[in-house]
Image (cartoon, rainbow, N blue to C red; front, side, top):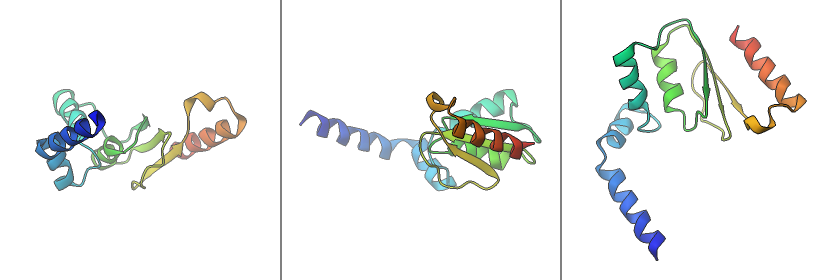
Length: 116
């Protein structure tokens, strides 16, 4: 019973949250993108022609913003979950716990080669 009440209150908060609504209107995958936007506006951290690695990228709003904002950059995203395709981004489904496995090393090596 308690979980149901918590779930309902979460849904209500999500509906009222201006960043959730704004992310849907602007086509972003989550509200987290506005944290990155704020950092970028304040410190000008995102530039063009960079090699960018986004670890823990799901659902992909930061990666999505990076691909729009950083022209000519090579972007690789890594997450445990599959992420819907983002233009010009190489995504790897990977647990960093298993990074020492030869097949995973080959996949990462290929991805890094693609970024060059």
